[in-house]
Image (cartoon, rainbow, N blue to C red; front, side, top):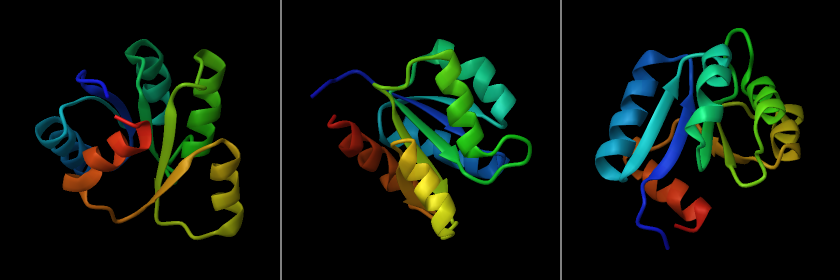
Length: 125
């Protein structure tokens, strides 16, 4: 088990949710967080941040979460990064597409205060 902060990249177009998640992760989870409001911002930020976990909203304007993850895979190695999609979608085709990229699915709404523990458990930390 590592004592270093868990590095989490969070991509969501909802400003309030991004703020809530960042504060919860930093204050309760000893996490370093890079918050991105769009797919374009994620592509510009995440490769240099080198996250342990990418938490990405599935449904966003512009690039959706699947497109973001696929584009990130062209700019960085994702084999050691845990991908987590936050979604309220129950569409079976979308769920299958998320699983196909090796992602964990986090149903919305989720408990932001329990999120750090859940992501650490996912990473085995």
